[in-house]
Image (tube, rainbow, N blue to C red; front, side, top):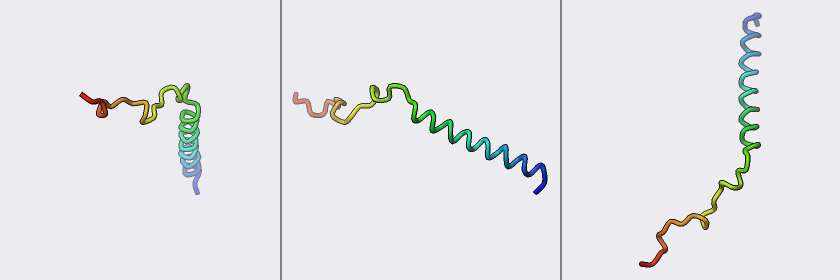
Length: 51
């Protein structure tokens, strides 16, 4: 493989690995994600109210 091929492969693999690690970091370090999550019983749809 030529020198340019090695450079292109190293840069592209570095970009993919960096993006992979960044996405994992963003998903695993979401601040206070428990406070924003709602279960089906917490959501009032209004369809069970009797007139």
